[in-house]
Image (cartoon, rainbow, N blue to C red; front, side, top):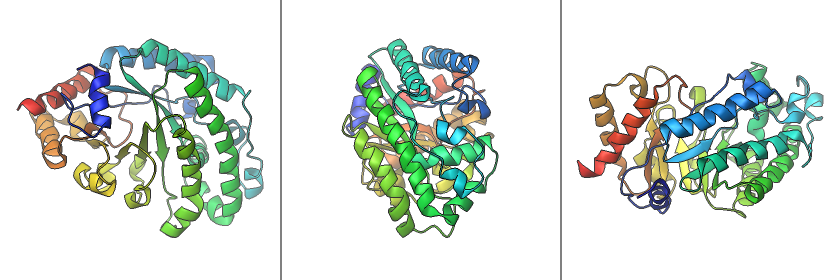
Amino acid sequence: MNRRQIIDAFLDNKTPERIPTAFWYHFVSFHDHYNYDDSEVYNTVITKQKQYIDEVKPDFIKIMSDGFFGHPSVSSKLIETIDDLKDVKSVGKDHEWIIKQVEYVKEVCDYAGQDVYKYYNIFSPLQYIRLRFEEYDEDFTKFVRLFKEDREVMIQAAKNIAEDIKILIKKLFEETSIDGIYYSVQSVQDKEFTHDMHKEYVEPLDLLLLEYINEFTDNVILHICGYAHYTNNLEWYADYPAKVFNWAVYTEEVDLKDGKKIFKGKPVLGGFDNNLGSILYEGTEEELRKEIYRILDAAGTDGVGIGADCTIDSNIPTDRLKLIRKIASEYLNK
């Protein structure tokens, strides 16, 4: 079976000829995640993305959105107050932030070819705001503070961003050979934020875009982000219209077996802790084999793929990722 046939079986919730594996990492520093208009950053991301495709040959490709994390209206000035947040508006279909993303994705898709599934990374509207505050401004309290100060202003800003994400989604499916979307979500990181509040404020924004994506394809990987040990209630996402679910197994303390139950039997991806010092980086070949077999013994092989909680460290050797794929491919013949 070629890579596309393997993922076809995975997406159909069946056992492929071999267990698929997929990992990804960033190609530039956190601050440069926002600098698509810097030609050096833009060209570095394209070059390294192609290099990764050639060297690792992943079972499916997650095209990283490095450089495009910052919605222009959020990035144009330092946002400190609710009044600042009111200036977050749609930038429209002709903005370079949208045009360059489409050009980038098209180039990578054309390079990768048709025999492998290709997903593009898109964040939920609120994530574009939160990430700018935390990664670029390095202020880890601002998002929750402004959300609690005036929820309606925060949601309106996110809706304005969502207008541009819909434009981007439409262009991606009309002008590139992208197969699906890797959609990243996260709950508001505040203990006072209840499920009812999530359903009132966050879920409608997520569904606005997920349902729009589903007008083009149902091939959505929902990533429930637990990067930096942020936690989420997985049950809140159980009915989101996605085909595959990926979450932070180690942070949430929910393994693939139990997660598959939460997500009503749909395909799941993950199993490895992405943090430095974990077995992913430090384990011997035999320790990796024992871990992969442990994961698959528990979760089964129908619609189960091996990956990580989130992005992995970019310094991981290519040969190590190939070794993990080799071990996973041997599981069904053990």
